[in-house]
Length: 341
Ligand SMILES: [Zn+2]
Image 1 (cartoon, rainbow, N blue to C red):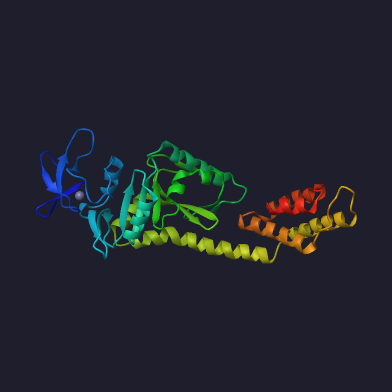
Image 2 (image 1 turned 180 degrees about the vertical axis):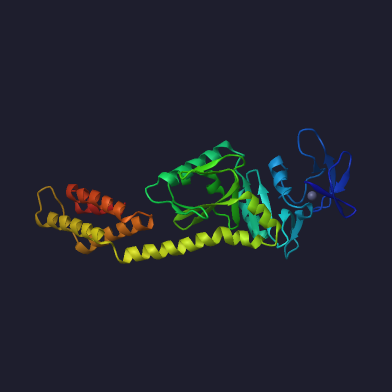
């Protein structure tokens, strides 16, 4: 804790000073050692267990804001109160989270503060930046075009190996507040020579896809310190929302009017299957072939690929592979099973 109360004044820790906790009102001792940053410590445990012992990272972030905005008491309607790391003039709470936090606790803070932004320390575990790098690399080599916008940088990624192994996303993806990761001095690079250690990163999951976008730390600090702090939220999320709507419309359009080469391939596969039934060989079991079922399965397959961001060329390529599948399967049910998988 940086500030204690002394006769209603907020004071910083100096050797020998005494003060009381602005949240629980109990006595505090100034800790002014050589190693840790100077801070106030509770004699007895604080009632407000939400605040954490500060690291340098934590204190540095808080100090980007004027002291009167730091460690502000926030009360809700039921008079529950907590110390917010920073509370801006337009009512945004910013919490700087270094240590691990349980989902329950995170959720209760999400609910307590109605306008909350988390800044999460992405340097605490060495593996986090590695996992994020892998994810960025995955986004740059993925079969589909994952970069959907340059200004602002927006990447779209579908669930897959690296996303599932990105632990920060597992831990924070379900937060209903805005969560920004700070990877400190680590450079984050992307294929078009985009490289920066001056950004905060937002990982925004939405239905079947996840968006990644960046925001300069300097602008974030500047805007949150100004009367434009509501803009940060909009600047981060509005481009993503727009993309989401655009993509959904495009996908719907593609599904409704499948490209001709795609339709032709579907027809061709159905033709193969029908032939298998008509010219039944002794080792084939295609009696149950049903043109409606075959058509539905193939259309669902194509629809799933479209929703996964596959281009028409990719889909044609995949359907060509499925042509062979229709030739080599000896059983109708084996074919339906493999397609439905
Ligand atoms: Zn206390």
